[in-house]
Length: 54
Image 1: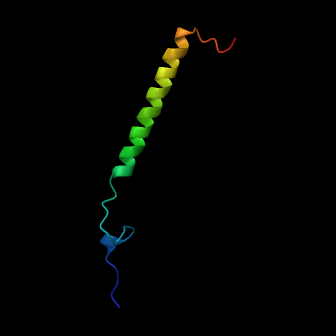
Image 2: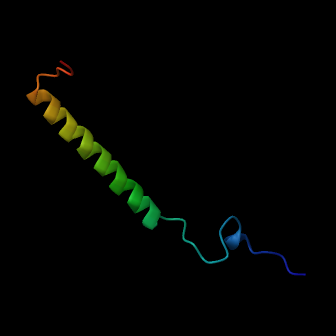
Image 3: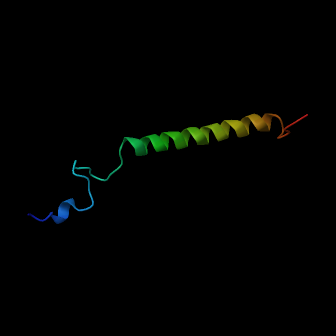
């Protein structure tokens, strides 16, 4: 039985590089969408002078 090489330890057999992939990009897109949503909410509330109810 052969031993595993030290290069492939801890990595998947499919040859993943360990760097950013599409899911990391989608995380940044969703973070940007949340930040823009908060920004637009602040802009909308400032037009009402931060009064939330009647």
